Amino acid sequence: MPTISRKNGYRFFFFSLEGNEPSHIHVEKGDGYAKYWLNPVMLVRSRGFQGKDLAEMTRIVKDQQTFFEERWHEHFGS
Image: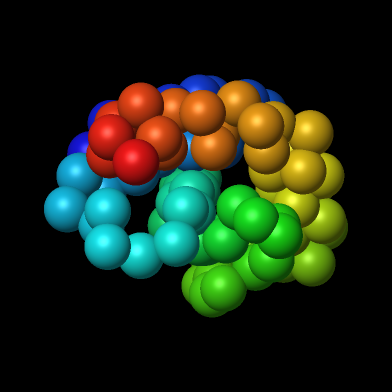
């Protein structure tokens, strides 16, 4: 479960056995969890986050989309 980035208390990471799904990033902070598709950026699921947290995470994922996709392709070799 490699951590790709940490920002504003959020941890952005992949699960190592998910290369068969479209590129995506998982996010956690405290008890909250979310998953975003990367292309296009879209929230897939979340639990434990308020709307302001989701807005902030969405902004971060959009800002870091290229970086996250590059790490995805490096990690999964696609």
